[in-house]
Image 1 (spheres, rainbow, N blue to C red):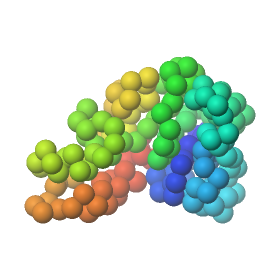
Image 2 (image 1 turned 180 degrees about the horizontal axis):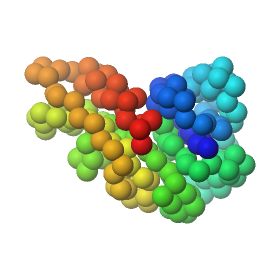
Image 3 (image 1 turned 135 degrees about the horizontal axis):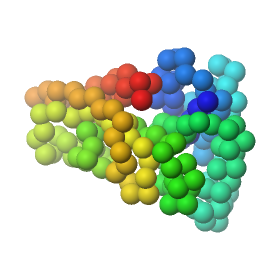
Image 4 (image 1 turned 30 degrees about the horizontal axis):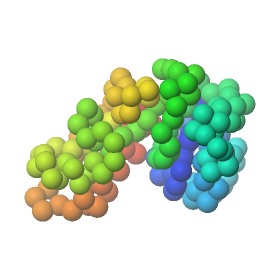
Length: 173
């Protein structure tokens, strides 16, 4: 079983669900995350653990882990989950937590990957599914997909091309 963590629309979560993977729950740190409604429409359990209700990252991560563990997942998938997780939390799910990142890691870790790829003049960009480790975007790589960067392409257009590949490779991971 799979538990998916989201913060927004959850398009990668939708790709995982539509691929027929056994999803036991979708959990968000935001009650207004649009992806929760999609999960509910598919009769998938949902929960919200609002990070704003906790004084520390550690307290939030402890509450989040309790909610995840209620569902006894074999894997946890981060799908647009916009929180940096504590080392203790990451260690709890060691080799059982995946993330999808919009670059060909190890290039362009962190945020604004498409803008930085364009500024660097790369000819190929893409996405990576990797195991989560305490070091941001640095875990063992599971699968990658590349897209050709088109001349004059905007960051938004590049992001859309990469997102299509994210939806293809995340279910395969």
